Image 1 (cartoon, protein in one colour):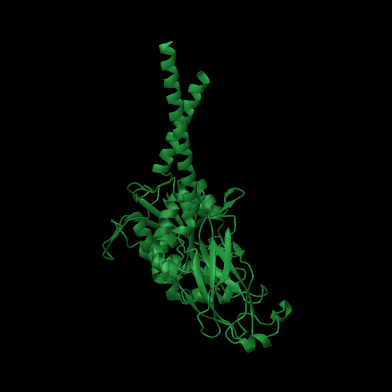
Image 2: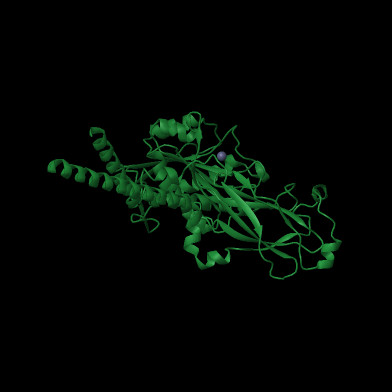
Length: 451
Ligand SMILES: [Zn+2]
């Protein structure tokens, strides 16, 4: 009897918790409060990345240590025009400074925040876009996240592709040294990777001194919004600026690390609409941890790949992306393609789709005359030099145009919805057991009393 009571209490408690979990999901973001409180005096340290022997990236004739100094100086000049803020730079010349020295300098001036200014490049020159790196641990990642959102929203409006607010774990905690060293001294720090100097789509944003200064001024204005500053000199009042919604329990997933590639990537051919050589392919992919950022495709069975393209309508800041889109390819009759699509997530990990053999059906004679596609014949024919090219990319499939809300949310919410349904079923089941056991106990009690 005792055990039974224990079980019933346990089951009841479990059922209540389940219902609570369903009604009030954890990690819900509330009001957009400013997480970091700096008190009366605000001290900001700007850190131009690299310097001296440490050149930074040198792709395409760019020299990162000089670029960061130009941007940081413009950021300093602009931010100094705001009221009630003391601004410092870790270096103003071409000096070598260790990451520890930079953090210690910030501590020596009583910094409330350190902003490290950088430009990016990738090994295979295939990445483009802007990102902000923040700490892996709360509350610092919350501070970084709110600033990163503020800055990247502005960069997005400026036309840049947004790779998101991200964090990276290393052996000693934070992977990035400047964030680790600053945090050891209790100073929040972020790394601003403005854009990629070695990719055509980003180069236009950083190939002149004026471009670099524009970045610095945008950085300063984002900092002003982040701290809610005013400038009588500039006639700007950012004191009412609303920051992105975040609380410390929900911010970690938003800037979360993702060490696994996208879970799903599949392609299938759509019904052709009779427009000659045009082939429409449905691409379906999902990443359960972060979001999808890019795709690329191979027409030769994986020997060569196209450049990366933005995943249509992806939003790295909210984590939303459509899980399906239509890729239109122009594959002339008499040729064939062994199509593979790669879907890349926020951390540049990719998953390859199935291989789809495309043979244009319109011209029966050409089809008959066509030689079978052999893997080695594809070696010379990359996406660039073959006659095959993308016609256009339909932004959304028809289904998504009809139901944009649902499709945007779908990839992210499908698993969660399934989980909730299972929880609900479990709760109902437990409730029924509880009810039955109580009825049985009541009936037995009555019988006992009658006896
Ligand atoms: Zn750098």
